[in-house]
Amino acid sequence: MPLAPPPATDDLVSRLGRWSAGRGPLYLLLAARLRRLVDEGALPPGSLLPPDRRLAKALAVGRTTVVAAYDTLRQEGRLVRRQGSGTRVARVALAPEAPRVVETSNPLFLHLLEAPDDVILLSCAAPVEPPPELAEAYRSLVLPGGDLGYHPAGLGVLREAVAARYAERGVPTDPGQVLVTTGAQQGLALLVRLLLAPGDGVLLEAPTYPGALDLFREAGAVPVPVAVGPDGLDVAAAVGVLEARRPALAYVVARFQNPTGTELPPLAGRRLVEAANACGVPLVDDEVLGDLGFGTAADPPPLCAYGEVISVGSLSKVVWGGLRIGWVRGPAPLIARLARLKAVHDLGCDVPSQLVAARLLAGFGSVRAARLDGLRAGHAFLRAELARWLPSWSCPPAVGGQTVWVRLPHGDGVSFAQVALRHGVAVLPGATADALGGSVRQLRLHFLLPPEVLAEAVRRLAAAWAEYAPTAGPGPVGLPGVGPAPVGLPGVGPGPVGLPGVGPGPGPHPHPEPDECPAPPEPGALTP
Image (cartoon, rainbow, N blue to C red; front, side, top):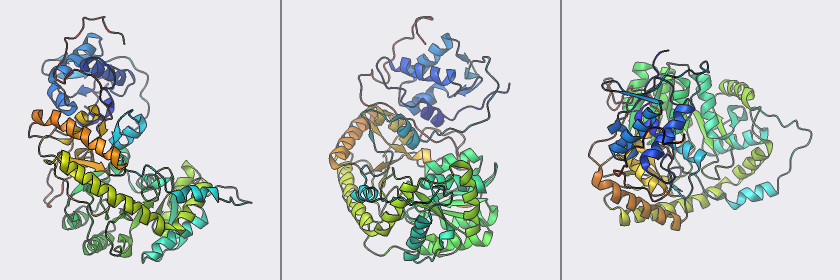
């Protein structure tokens, strides 16, 4: 049996999840989580584990904690440690290998799956309360008669409502150009499944939406990341990639880019669309955050106003994430193919939610205005609290969206996120979203929670920073397999998508200090 490839350090951190939840010495808690990963096959036989120091730095614990945890599993026969060869999972007889399945290591999704108790989630940005219009729409819902209820492409009334919304934005759209999906994530997933094959190149922003990275990784695609600057994507570099490499797909977030919050200027957007069309590269614009601009001026045209663009949108950010309705707008032949693919998976979205979504789109302006009022207030409040409690952090103002892009003065976001979790706050480290291997000092924080909860979250972050800052070195945690290898174009690198993520952890509890690590017990003293 060939050796299993080593997990990237940040991927193992995410797979460990809330490893420090509970009571007792940290090394025993870490050993218990590693034991579970080995026994469940998440760390297959022969897997090479990260070196002691690298894993300790990523987990923000002392090296002795990792050494003791590894030694505990070595004594149990689960790990093999050899000088010069590192630490590997021991070889044991297993059932025949199952087909390869890619599981998420995205911290956004892991936090939702494990729902940490007493942890304030500043990592998952979504409205915490649905607007009153949603409940009213359900109360007045009238289901159609004489209808089987299966609509793989979406209900006609909702497709018409989405098309009308694009027409209002200056882009005439036929309902046949719209596919209704179970949220924008499914829309992206269907596009990836239809348009990408293993080994295909994907132009994407660095950093970008971690959920898209998961999808590209699952497809076996090769990312071609282009850096994001203060004005959004480096379009000159992106055009160079399109012309030189002709990737199979290009994916961007033009308005209020996730996670940086930047906005691509209209002229730059036009240039990007024209280049993609000229090169025959399908261009996907993720518009999920596009309606959340803080300014009072009229919205600029969407990218699809400049040429052939596949637009992905949803109601999750303006209305509520629990209303799982999204859409894909594109050429009618593509939409027909996507509808056939969607039919294989779910035969269409549920009819009541589609009817509610159509009604909400009819009164979209008022729902959007109320949401923006809350976002502006939350943005101002969070920045004021950060300035008060963490003045050494850099927090530029956002022009839209629902997050701020914070830069730490030193240290790295992946290891600080571990300390923050132990203080009861979940944050998104920038490095988990960056296929160039950058953004190591950045954090993404959202401002959708009530003021009193945001205030408490910042106080906890300040306590975590007070613990972390004195021990943090100037260098970042290494991200194996992800790097900014140049290709002769500014701001571009071909490094593969890593396995992004830093796992969720517990709230505050009486653990020993990170460097306090009792000696490992004698063999046989542990229960599995």
